[in-house]
Image (cartoon, rainbow, N blue to C red; front, side, top):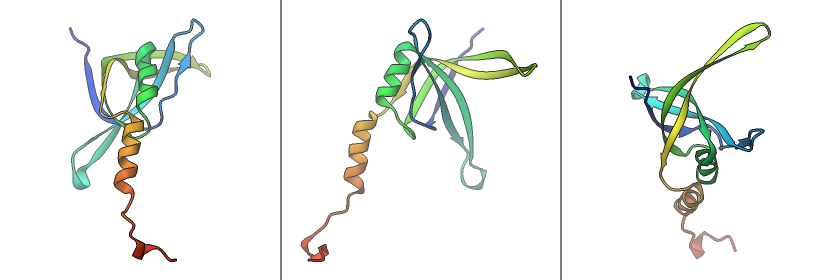
Amino acid sequence: MNNLVVLTGNLGADVEVRYTGTGKAVSNIRVAVSSGSGEKKKTDWFSCVLWEGLAEQAQQNLGKGSEVTVIGRLQNRKWEKDGKDVWVTEVVATALAYGQPRAEKAIAVSQEASPEITDEDLPF
């Protein structure tokens, strides 16, 4: 039996890396995946866990809104909170794919967003 998930969407926030007591890097990200179009367009949010090198790589190269493909496996976890069981289903990433790193993307966006200004546009 296979447990394989492939999601392509956009990050809901910048990637934040934490470190476990044993020094392993970990990051929890949320990926927005849209489907449909027009009035039937729908966005689903998926929780993903990135470990070690993937977490650090994502923090260096991705930011809020970045397009990312997460490849991994589904995992269910359970813990107790206030006497009640809490369950979460998340994707444990085994690989990431993405386009331009966020620094390059920011440069590209800022160049595209800057209108050309001529001497006639200046007020003095």
